[in-house]
Length: 115
Image (tube, rainbow, N blue to C red; front, side):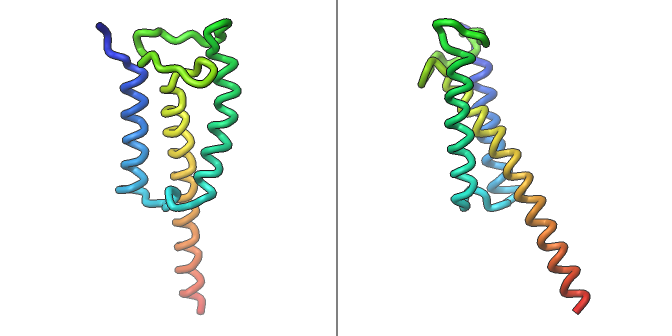
């Protein structure tokens, strides 16, 4: 029996991104409705694209089945793809929001010095 590498790496990536948000960057995205709306929109489009790319009836992308958990839903999409998408989208939005937060603080500090 082989280790489902993609499954393990997906879970590690999700935990890492959530941990970075909660304990390091603290950008606050998990408290924002805009984040959840953006994530939902991305995941809906991921369903269409991934569904087309990974459908078992005529796949364009073929995964090594030993690297996956075997759970596929909807349209034969490996469940790991959703975890990977979550981690990737969250990491980008987290870093973007963190940078915006830092710029806002810097601009506020500079404005206070000028008054």
